[in-house]
Image 1: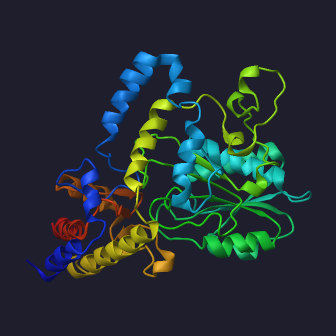
Image 2: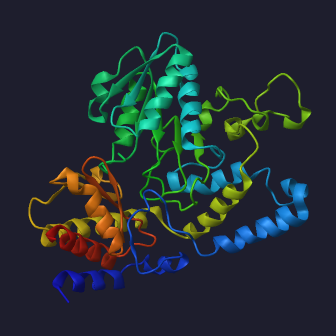
Length: 398
């Protein structure tokens, strides 16, 4: 064994989270794509079998009450809340991330003071966030101002209504300064909306502690909810009474079964609901969240940083100099839970990732030249990191 292989073995032996890997359905593949789709927790299929055969198959309509289907969006929201640093009663689960971004940006625009007509949007954001913000701006009479996260403070002004930012950049894995930027947004008199898709379940967020106004996130990445699992919307308690959703559906009505033509919003996080909950995927998510029982997010963050540090060290040791260049920040305070490497030759990016996959290392890419490797501390180990770097070097040597 090489020195790095021996170190990986020792690090895995000392890993307090290592036993959690057994909670997931995994094979010998090095799975480094949990930042796109988390692995399947082993117990979820049995839970879904019960949901389908008993709750749906036998109880049928009775399950809305007897099986707790109706209250699932808020109940599961309260399960997610500790993972993002929120008290209960502020998160509702349902719809896609895109739909929740729309709700959050429009509602924040309506909460902003008169005369504020600018929506600042992370210029490096995941494209849909920008598309949705543009639509929200057209609908509310605002205008979108794209700005690099590093330049947000200088772009804030008396016309700023809302700032929509990603906590972790999906391409580079850069972690943005949520506490500092939220404080700056508030000092300017605006509201902060954060997209947590690439941070929730990988690192502490602190929504309540840092005074975030609204936030959204998906559940199929580090929360392992399954493909297309429903997203969530956080509305800080102080804003809930005035929260004016642009999608006032029947399930967010104060008395949904009155079927009245006039809309009266429910109290609390229920206001974030729209239509009938997507029960099958929602209950799969609820079951998947069981893997977090007793797990400290701080411990997850510590292992994430150790894993990504070790992977970068292995890449530096194994890969010929200049073939790939890390674009993920080295500083811990600026790094999420993925490592992005830029290929020296952009034309070979897809071929490299295809070869890695064929040899049992699954990551993904972002065109034109970024190889992405996501590290989910609940099931990725140090031997995985070493093996991935070693096989990457072998692929690049061909």
